[in-house]
Length: 512
Image (cartoon, rainbow, N blue to C red; front, side, top):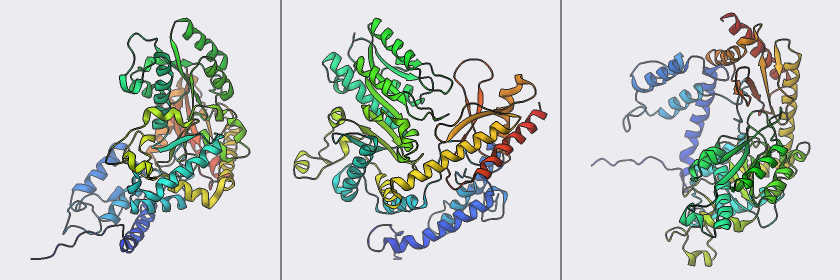
């Protein structure tokens, strides 16, 4: 009988030796794929790119990865006896077909180029594969996550009573904040355990207050929590897309007058479009006046805490009942590195869970603590490790310098827009993003030209620029967006990108 050789594992004494050659292969393939791509994003239409990938995966001798010389990928899924170079070929394929946030012309989204040290840290915990749902699956990283969260809570300005967990990002964190708000505020009003008995029949309707520029996940969370998206009351914003505090005050009073229950005020610290920061102290004051929970979505703007220059913008954050932070934005971590924090650990009570096979009470009494009751998830990666390594390597000051550099780049880009005769700046940057648009000769074509020039740049593989719409109704609201999250980019490269956008606008205008 022929012995079957099992594939190598990443753990144990021999795991590192098995990983070594594969890591070298991946690094070589990443470089090869980036060279094939030759820009911030692969050129071509989505349909053309899909067809190329499909042919490369399914046809022997068929299409080469992204139309350039290379190995066919037909045997990638052949298993034993198939092509043993699948790792190299598939990594090359993905690298060639990816948007690269490290490229100076890739500046559309809150999509950061991760720090190499954070990626290396991610490799380490991927090899060890701890799961944060029980102590016996993650002894060291259970302690590490607790300690890292303590540091981050202190950075926010929370007292020692704080608690939290690593999340998949702002969407999960916002859901958790509103879930705890529901359980605490509705529970207090009804005298019931909402997480057990559900929404009380005949109770006043719960309302959530968020600005017109708040993240869409607020409405999604309201739907998931059984409150309905219509439970969210939209508060108007000013020209800089900041919530109008006087409008919030009126909306809260009207809510009470109608016999409804103000459940939560969601303030945004760093909107996705402009980085606008709502008046946090005023939001906290008004929420407290009406017995509502204050949640601050600081998924983007939380990075300002790292900067001595920008941290004052977040004054009042420490008053929130719960906070969302994303370190895979202005923290330069690979996805995911979301953080959810509450000011008082006792407000976490409704999430507590006991599973005999994960966190039996006698184990916890003996000191084998579990993080299971802090998360909506069971199996969970130790994402705090890469944050810990990054903080140990760079410290707050080192990361703060990166934030300041990106802030400077955003202002350089805004100045380039302001100086160009065919471009219009919406507002000066607050953090590292700003909105602008191309001005065609015929103002009626503005929305079509701006939407079209962005797709033109994508199709040509020349730039990745964001697109959004200002709040309101009717035409003229389409804006382009640059989000500067690459501290290695120069002001000259940002100016070059701005001019590239203007040239694409001229080309697009000629086609209409």
